[in-house]
Picture 1 (tube, rainbow, N blue to C red):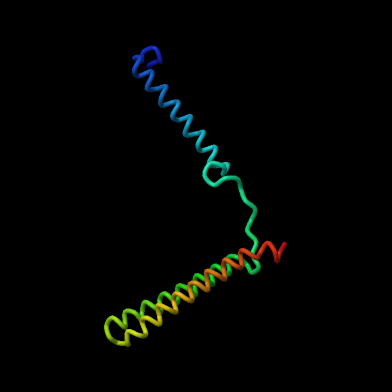
Picture 2 (picture 1 turned 45 degrees about the vertical axis):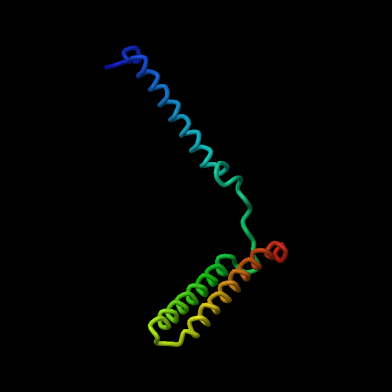
Length: 117
């Protein structure tokens, strides 16, 4: 069995540095678990006019379907199955639908505290 006196001075200083590093790691874990180190203090839950999760899910589904449709039309236009005019219309429609979904979700979240109090 060895004790601290049998260690050399260099090994003893390294051991002290390791102990200090472990203490720092535990200190960081304590702050992160409280939620104040990375994300700040806990905020109150967000309020929306319509259910927040439902509106985000519906917007995600609509934009995803629009993206899929626009992609299929663009690939069909590349391979000359449809006119290239349809590809530009599909991309324009994708932009309009995406912007409308983003505006709807942001307005829903923005006016939530005013409507629900």
